[in-house]
Image (cartoon, rainbow, N blue to C red; front, side, top):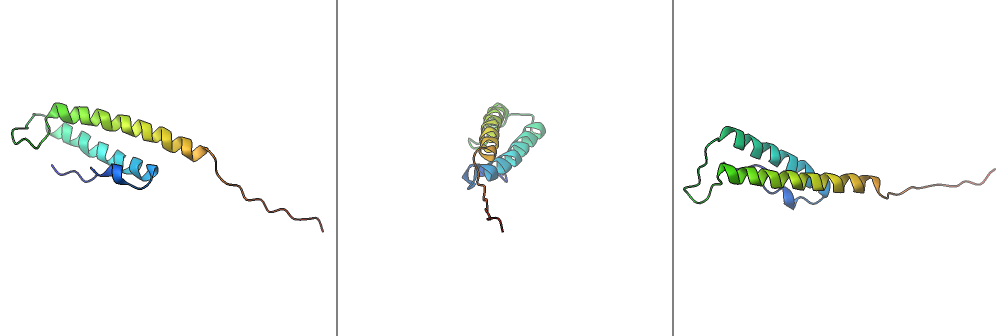
Length: 87
């Protein structure tokens, strides 16, 4: 099966990577659910066990990115203040 989001890691920002990664996790999980047998005789496809391991790795990357995105969303920032003198 050809995945739509295997290049999630190439996204420019952590937020975009996280969005694409969530979509990739969903498609990998769906493939695991629909392909219950392990077929790797062609040397190219992954066995079901390999896909499960890959899914575990993807979810750990998702957790890491979620922490990174939530930390960067709350850390720092800019405030612009315009002071005016009394009339």
